[in-house]
Structure formats: structure tokens, C-alpha cells
Length: 239
Length: 246
Image 1 (cartoon, one colour):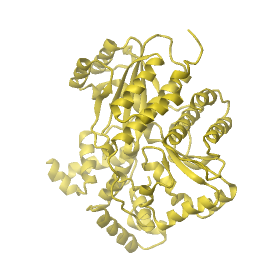
Image 2 (cartoon, one colour; image 1 turned 90 degrees about the vertical axis):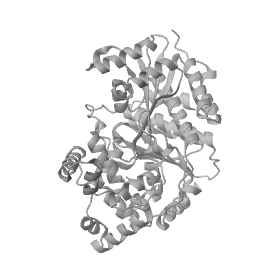
Image 3 (cartoon, rainbow over the protein chains, first blue to last red; image 1 turned 120 degrees about the horizontal axis):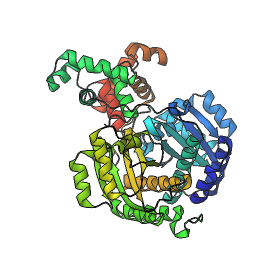
Image 4 (cartoon, rainbow over the protein chains, first blue to last red; image 1 turned 45 degrees about the horizontal axis):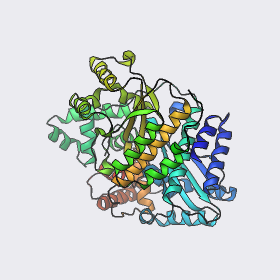
């Protein structure tokens, strides 16, 4: 399946054709329902974050999903952000962290004919994140590890081929934090105040302020909390 | 030079199956290296380019690999994991790319030194695959080519997918047991998400259609639940625990 899809995906003339081929390949694995979302802006490719840039989820469900504002609640979207590997929607460990509304979204999805669901995170350069959801309408699919791995690789190849179809813009300068900026963020993550950080680093409160202002400017954020989040997203900081 | 696919023995489906069955990172890597050798790649090396906090592992060059141990030692001792222009190239890449070993892109003496080091073990340009996981963690597979036939898009894709599959298995094998389930309520999650976007209490209150006092109440609940002393620390903790929607 995978070898064939590599060939096919690289010879597609359009993005629509590429998605159609991807859908067919996923269908061979038993996933007849597929959706592709850009979770972050893909600035280098001139693409904005959007839920469901491609997909063949049932139309009724999609209407209900949008009307109910499920995009903010959808646990699959949330898991895509934090998952390192493809996952199933029914993973019991993950399910323990769900709120009631989130459990409800999953149950409704299943009622709408999205069974045996899986989610796949796709990561590009500069913190770019996309996600793929796939499900079967039959509910007869066995979600074994090899099935999940194959779906993952098809999705990864789809993402590569999809990005190759877009002209890239000039590369962004990678954000590399200075030692001081990194220290400030690390201690902020530990819950330290600016005054405490100044004491720890043996510098003045003004110096810490200076590093913070530089961080805000470089990361285009209003405060340290957002700076922390942005630095992690850009891969400039690991927690 | 033949245009034929390189045979069923090296089909990606087959390799994926085998790597999935590997019981240790080293075993999984050996299978990957075999598969890549069959596709005309010689030396293969797997590095953690950033810390992998979720796995409790620090950044390390050539954690696994077929490169000579003495060469790897020298690379590490020279601090090249910081200086090598290869990693900048990796940072920019969405999939496998070729990295030239000519000194063209090397601006500093240190960068030229890094390229010279690679030329000791590689005859042709390097191939490098970025491997990413949550929290901004970045790893890399670097491979050297045996012959100078160049790499077409198909081979680069095959390399990307095999490396990604190895990485998936690696993360699975090394992952610490999942943290005890901390559950956030919908209100807590919303407050945390907006806080992480840099919004003030007042702004969050407007977005959520509630009062700043209520937002404050949920922020304090979050601090208690996540056992931290500031909202920024709560965001950091939530990222580490994989609770946060970015």
C-alpha cells in the first residue's frame, strides 16, 4: 500500500487529486472516512490554519460540528497537538482526561457514523502542525498496531506531497534564543517571578525586564506566558 | 542504473512490519539500517537534536548509528551538535533533504570544520530527515549515499517514511508510563488555552462571556490542580503533561 502511494502521490497534478488518492489508499486500510486539518498557519506556504481543508466526513455531522462550535472542544484536535504517535479515539488512558462535553463529542461522532476513529499528528518545520482524522462507517475495523502505522505513513506521505505542491516562500530565520532568554523562560516555567529570576541569575530586575521585552518582540507575544507557549511551538525551547 | 523498484524484500510495507515487531530501540534501528542499506544508503545515524523531555532523554549526537565510534567521539568533543550547519538545514526541512558537503553554505571556520568532519565518513552529499514530536522535540536521521546516482523524490519519500516509522517505534519503546490522569474541566481548559495565548484576565472574561473574578477563580483552581505557583508555570506544566491545546 505504502510503496504504491508514494508513487501515486508524487505524480498527482492537483491537491484535490492528491486527496482523492489518499482517501483511496486509506480506504484500502478500512478507513472510509478521512479529514485533513491545518492546526497552525503554514506561513511558508501561504496557508492558514483551518479545520477540514479536505474531508469526506458525513455532511450532517460537519454541519452539526460547526454549528455546535465543536472545533474548540474536539478532543481529537487536542490530542493531535500533544500526541507523538498516531492514536485511537478510544484510548482509555487518554479518555481519563476528557471533560464531559468532550466525551459527548466523541459519542456523537460515533453515532454519526465515525467509528474506529484514529488521529494522526503531522509536523513540519517552524512548529507547523497538521492533523488527520480517519474512521470507518462499518465499525468492523480492527485497530491493530500495523494498521495504525500504515495509516500514519500514508498520512505522512500525503503531508509531504501536499507541501511539495505549494511553492515555498523564503525560509524564515529560525528563532534561536540567547542563553539569558532561555534561562528566563525556563525559570518562568518553574513559576518564578521576575524578581526571583533576577536573584537566581544574579542580575538586576531591569536586566530580566530587558530580556523579557526582547523575547516579546522576537516571538511577537504580549507577555511571558504566551512567550513560553510560542517558544515551545517554534521548537526553540523544550520543557 | 535501473529504474526498477528495488524489490519486494525492501518494500516499505515489509520493513514497517518488521520494525513494529522490534523489541528494543537498537533492534529497531538495526532493521532500519538494513533496509536503508538495501536502498543504497551506507552509514546511518540517529541523533536527538533537542532534549526529548517526554522520554526523559537529553540531546545527543549519534545515539544510534553505524558511524565509527572514534569519529563520533571527536564530533561530540568538538561540540559540533551546536555548530554544524547540517542542523540548521534540518530545522528548515519538512521532509528528507540533501545536505551538500561542499563548503558553499559554511560561513565560519567552525562550520567548515563540521563539513570537513563529515567528508571523512561520507563520499557524497548527506541525506537528512527531520523527526519531530510534541513539545517542539526534534530528532534526526542522517544517512550517507553509497553511489552518486542522486536521490529522486521517490527515494527521498521512502527514506522519510522509513525514518518516521523508526522514530514512531523509538518513541513508543522509550516513552515513560503516562502521567496520572489530571482532568481539566471545560472552563479550566478554556481559561488555560486563552492564558497561553497571552490574554489577560479581563480579555479572557470578555471572550468567555464571564467576569474577571470567575476567570481568576479558574486560574487559581488550575494552579492548585497542576501544583504550580504562576499561570506561566501552569502553561508549562500543561504542555509537559500534554493537557494543552495550542
